[in-house]
Length: 326
Ligand SMILES: Nc1ncnc2c1ncn2[C@@H]1O[C@H](COP(=O)(O)OP(=O)(O)OP(=O)(O)O)[C@@H](O)[C@H]1O
Ligand SMILES: [Mg+2]
Image 1 (cartoon, rainbow, N blue to C red):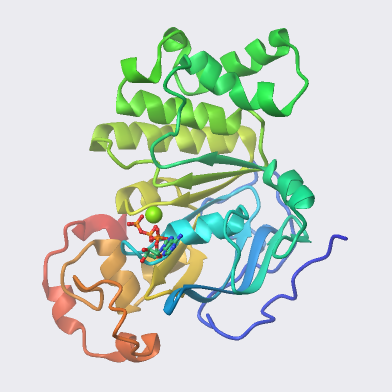
Image 2 (cartoon, protein in one colour; image 1 turned 90 degrees about the vertical axis):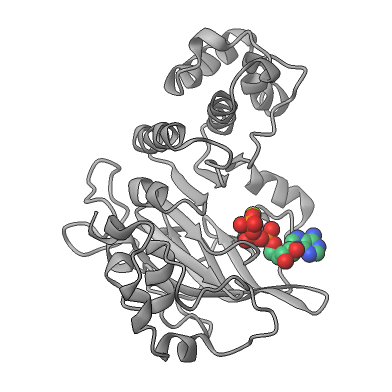
């Protein structure tokens, strides 16, 4: 049975600005990074309501609530160890939250039977951190793999789809190579082509830029951007890379100390005066996010953390000083 989550039905994350209006714009009717000209936000394709996940006594995600707008790119950021990968695994049903609801295109997946979960998972293309290619298969066979595994398509149709996606990521000349024979950037691109080959409604990326130099990251960002625009799919990206987020994301969520600090459009996030968000988006060393990043022992309320005097933070030149004015 398909329903919708009750919007804002859970407490917590009160700062999160959640898209509510099921307007559903066409992919080309977009003023990037925010609502359309009528001030509406696309309908949510994934909705989290009060998602909480602990491992033993370690609470990794606490009462996380947000909506991922359909046909847009959402980036989830946060210091290392804040539960970003755990969040992604909950969304694809590889982990199960202790409490809360996760809705994917109108279906609540928490507690779903394996058979149904398997069906829902087919909506996702996933690009894992290391590309997760099969080392003994050529790039062609790697990209073709999901089609051979999950569809009854013939080799002719498979070839068309593989070529279409290889073309998109600029790998047409390298399809006969093994992953061990190509660069890290090419592996990522092959991973992207494989994630897209099933024409998924939703593509999830766990740190697509890790291990790449800045030029390759910029190239990959451009590719991600174009792929999203061409397919109109929903992209959900987990990353530490702030310039990357500024280039690709329409919406941003920031996780800190197991909580969602805020989820909003990129423009709203850039204008935020919350010191946690400002520090994260400018990459400054001084501020609420310290080396102890997760500070498990520190359970100070985030509102209280934000209200402290962080004026010294803005005096320090940030690594990405200009980023908020990009
Ligand atoms: N299966 C598991 N069992 C126990 N603890 C886990 C498990 N998976 C993750 N954790 C813990 O949950 C916390 C969050 O992990 P996660 O991998 O989600 O962090 P992250 O935000 O993705 O970090 P990074 O940016 O370094 O990838 C970590 O403290 C990790 O040790
Ligand atoms: Mg991770």
